[in-house]
Image 1: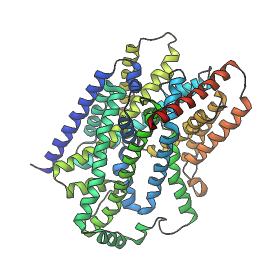
Image 2: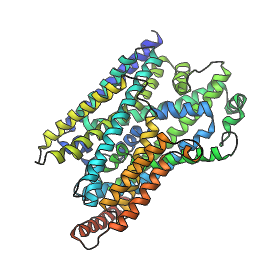
Image 3: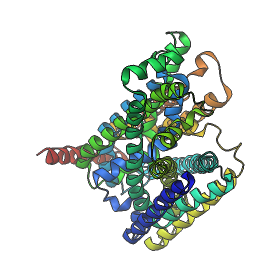
Length: 507
């Protein structure tokens, strides 16, 4: 059989498995909370791998190795920043958010939690947050569909539209019916696929070259700066670049599709187990991605092969070093990275539309099964809009990964931290901080460039949000009101529950 035939067999097996898991998730989904949050019954291993897979997307398998291949070790600062941010997110945010969201009127979305936490009776905070999520994630899903279409073009010399529709269709199927559980359990399989691919490929490449000494020689032969942590010297520009790369870690605190996994844990005490599993997966996967990019420099140089697109380094290595069927599974890992993020973003977008906007429009209490079906219709609508945007492949990428990451981190990150660890956050402070952070990140990232403005937009956006939220909250905080007493009691109860659960798990 030809290589393409083996590739297709592997992809068909992968697609069937994903749809099967989606069906399993559908059978477990009984009501609206199940569809949006898995009934808050996610085991720690599932939560950890699901958070990792939905976080990393195609960036882990294509973007980071490609950046290392093209630029060298200087790109490793991004991986370091993300590792630090992810660890702090699991350590600080996960247990308190799991407890607090249930105490704060059983909030099942980030906007509803912020609104309930601050007792925002105007609903401005909830609606504005829902709109931010809806707009960014619809475009984000579209960019994933574009990546899927272009993947089929490069891997199979196929048609862009066919690839786009196939990736979108399979992702939509298991997300539409399986909901949060379907997305989470498929994420586990997808995360393990990515993990295996990124650990095996660099080992095979080293064996092919000979040994580590030959690898190092091959890398430095192409360019000595490839193994320089500062990319050829420590300058003002490189310092800004390093700070910008490390600052990606700030984004974790405000990513709705990641922190919703914390909210779905069975209890706050299991955040520690999930953290260990999630960080182990992430660190080893990032090391594999970094190694694949760097070793790829040597392998392609030694074998005299020109790589037109740096981001295909893992794909081309797998096709040259593995049996075609196994290489097909690696191609599936790339699709897994794309599809896992898309499915998570569809669910979060659906929850924003139904839970945070539609519930406020329809004042009457809606049946739980009806809400679950409305959630499915919202997923379908979001997917169709994203597909229509993705048909214009040149207009939908727009560096949305970095842009959306900064937008969410700047809009929500400081508020999540303040809401969990500072008693005096007010609804007005949260509204001003969120909108200011989002606007600053948007303007900085789109209208400003050069010098200090080359700094990643999440840094000014995050800081502006944090400062204004604190200042405005201090100015508008009113002690001894009925609302404040409720807020203070919930804050205290959250701390007590987390402390009790952690001690129980340790015992």
